[in-house]
Length: 606
Image (cartoon, rainbow, N blue to C red; front, side):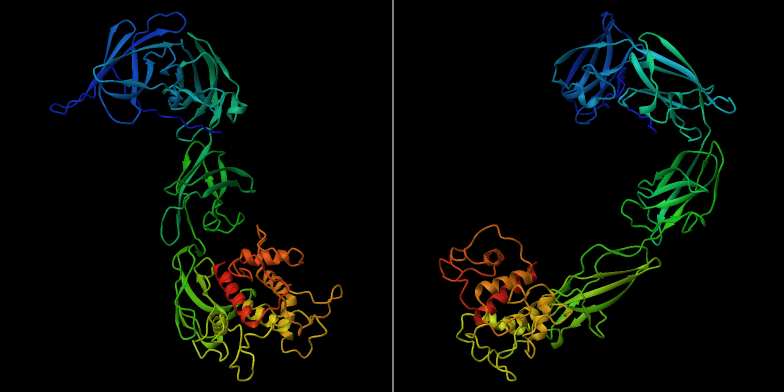
C-alpha cells in the first residue's frame, strides 16, 4: 500500500504578514489572544507559529506579537470565523487545531468568531512531543538514499508528520505524539520500493514504533529495495484525446501480475514498485469497456506484446498507447413525421462514440408489437422514407449500422406509431354508431377490413364478435409470429385458422374444451369477460391494485377484467356510475373497435 505525503499550505502568522496595501479600503478588525502552555505542567511555551484560516476561505492579514512568555496577540483580523492551528517552531510539542483537535482533523476543529474591535481570549495546551530518527540505505549496495520521504501514521492511517532524508540519507521525524507510530517510506522518483517499517507492505501489516514524549528515538538504518517504475500516456485514436481511467497492467513474460496503475484526467499513468527486468504492458478499459483492450505496442495478446526492459532505480517513460473504440450509440435515434401512408418520415443518426472516422448505413424495417423479427423494406436505405400501403398496421424502425476500424455496431431507432392508411371512405353502416371514430381508427390501422367481402363497404357494428374474428383482430393488432404447428381440430376451413394458430403459439389461447383443449370454437360468440382475458394476455397487462366492478366477483376472469380497467381499456358498462362490467354480455364489433383502439393507444404509450 502506498500513502502519498500530504502537503499542507498554511498561513504563518509570525510578526507582520500580508498587510493591506497603502490606500486600501479599511475593514473592521478584531484580535485573538492565545495563551500557550504545556499540557500537564502549565509551563508557558514560546517560539510559536499559528496557522489561521478563514472558515469561508476568504483572505485577510494579521499581526502576531508575543506580549509575554507563552502569550501571543493576533491582531488586525477581519471579523469572521476562523480555524486556529498552534505549532511550536522547534517541534518540542505536538501541533494541534483549537480546541485539542489533531492536525489531520481540521473539520473537527472549534470555530473562533472574531468581532469588530473585540478580543477573543484562547487557552491552548500542547502535549510534549517525541521524535524518531534514522537512516535510509540501498539494501544491496548499502549506498545512502537521499530524498526518501518518511511519514508517520497512527493506527487509523492518519498522517502525524512527514520529513525527507538529507543528502546523507539521514532523517528525523519530529513533533510526534507519544504512543504507537507507523512509519511509511516512499521515494518521489519511484526508484525504491514503497513500504512500511520492517518491510511491511501495508499499514495493517506494519509494526509500530513507540514514541516517548520528550525523547528522540533512533530506529536504525532502513534498507530499501531498488525497484523500477514505468509511465506513459494513453490517448484515443482519431481524436488524440486523453483516455481516462484506463488501467496499465504490468506482467512478467510468463503472465504473472507485477503491478498496475490507472490513467488520470490527462491520460497519464505511472506504475511504481516494479522489479527490474523484462515486462509486458496491457491497457484495459475495465470501468466502462469503451476502449478495446490491447498490449504494448499495438498487440492483441501477451504472447505478441512488445517486451519493455526496466532497469533498476529509474523510471522507464513513454510507454504509450493509442486505443481504439468500437462504435457505440448513446442517444436514442428518433423518427419524425406522421405515421400515415404517403407521409415522409425522417430519422436521425443519433449520437455515437468510437474511434473516428465512423461510416453509417441505413435500413428501414417493418415491425409489429409482438414479433421480434422485423422485415426489411427493399430499397429503403436512406434517412427518409415515404410510407406505402404495405406498411399499414406496422410500426417502422430505422436500423443504423456504424462501422470503424475496430468493429461494426448495429442500433435501432425508436419505433413510429402504427402506420395508418390514408383517410378513405368510412364504412357505410357506422355513421350512427357512438363507436364510429374507433371503427375508423382500426380500419386505417389495418385491424379490420369490413364484414361484407369482397366489397367490404360495411363493418356490421351491431354484430357479435366471434372467437375466430377475435383471433384475427388480435393478430392484426400485434403481428404475432408464425405458428409452430396446427393447434386445433375444429378450425379447418376457417378463414381465421392462421390467426387462431398464431394466437395459440403466442400463448393467448389454449382452446375452448378443457382439459383436452383440441378445439377453439371459432364460431362461438365472445363474452365481455372472455374478451378481457384475450386482451389481458395479448397485452401482458400487469396485475391491478384495485377491484373496479361489483358484478364480476363470481367470474373466473375477474383478474383479467381488473387488469383491463387499470390499463384504461374499459370503464364499465353502466355509465355514468360504471360500477358494473357486464361480464356475461356478448361483445359487439363496434364495442370491440373501441377496446382495440384503447389497446392500440396503450401499446403506443408503453
